[in-house]
Amino acid sequence: MPAEESELTIARFIKAPPAVVWKAWSTPEHLAKWWIPDPIECKVIKLDLRPGGGFETRMREGGGEFQPHVEGCFLEIVPEARLVFTTVLTEGWQPTEPWLALTAIITFAPEGSGTRYSARVLHKNAADSRKHEDMGFHDGWGTTIEQLAAFVERMG
Image 1 (cartoon, rainbow, N blue to C red):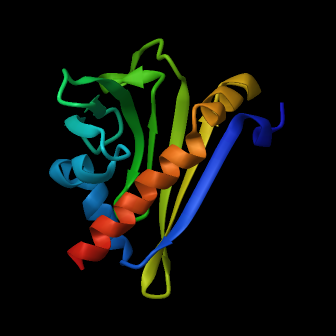
Image 2: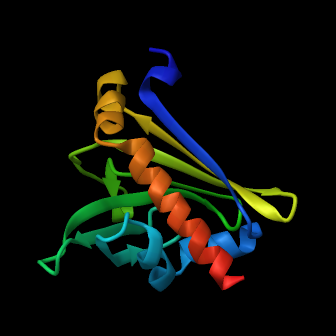
């Protein structure tokens, strides 16, 4: 199967250097402010930025209980440049059966005085990729990248 059929990509220029964008990604209290589209609240449970480290966030809408959002495992961490996580493993490389199996490759590339932030999301097959796209991948991930950009541009 061609890779294009099972992956989704999105990118944006952010007016902040990679170190600042990385800090917004790698600091739990910062990540919680932009990781899920407003007005949904985000709670960061785990953000262990090392291969095999856990990545878990929960979401809450309208003041109810926090519900599962993402639970996964980091595969690769290159500070200020790249991070890779998957939902098919949880902390410590434990296999799991997620509701949506994916691997996300996030890159932070210097571009002028800012950062080219890119997300490449790999899926098990074309059907899962279409399912993610139909769920609003571009709107959802696009909104969170806009929120990230606004957050880091305020950070300076």
